[in-house]
Amino acid sequence: MLHARIAYVLDEIKWPFAICCVLLLPATCMQLFLQLKPLFHSLSYRSPFFHGFYCFFILLAVFSHFIFNLFMTFEHEFNHGVFAALTGNKVTALKVFENGGKLEYQGTANWLISLAPYFFPTVALSVGIFTEFWDPKWRWLAEFCLGASIAYQLFSTLVETELSQPDLIESGIPFSIMTLPFLNVFSYSILTAYLTGGFHGIMKTLQALFASPLNPSLTALKWLIKHLF
Image 1 (cartoon, one colour):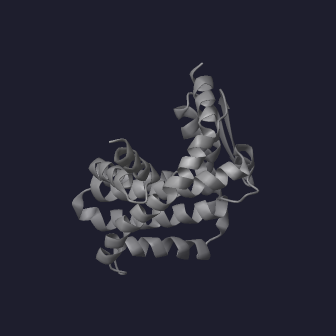
Image 2 (cartoon, rainbow, N blue to C red):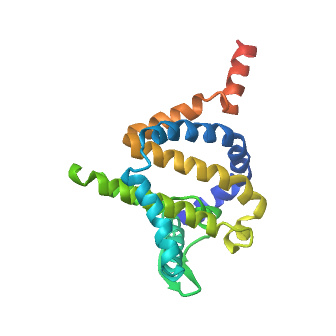
Image 3 (cartoon, rainbow, N blue to C red):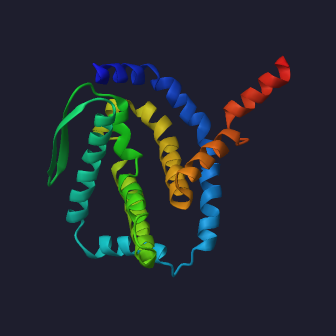
């Protein structure tokens, strides 16, 4: 079965992937910083983006956390479901309760399904793609929604990511610690690249990451070329 094969491959590459995440984290952090720096210079604190960003936290403070907790639980389980489907499993049910949620699927579990809610910015990415089709006259509203969605994404990731989480324990705490920082920074790098340059922006970001002087694979390649040729 496809889901079993994918789970087997993910299990085989688990620790090499974790090591790569640690090695690539500095280059990815630098790339995200370089992408965000011009954005912060170009955005005014009175811009719709920052208004949306601030508005999320105001709403969070004014209204009960109950509504946000329900939505965060739904998004959490939805992320599990997306990656369960992407790895060949069949999602059968998604349940949200007052004190938690549950995803049911037929297939084989893997660490990508377990960790997906802790790094994949579902809401911000969905809002970014959706606003691409808005009329230019509604650009201010699109920026407002993007600001609010990114604020939510940062808040939900910080709230949900605890070492006591069953998902992290299931994947392995050392593995989670090694991979999640890179996966989060990389996700926001790709998200920023898409919002500013579409799919072309994503390709430029990936090229920049490969060519980064902080990328150990590039350093190793240069060393090999120097000593072998």
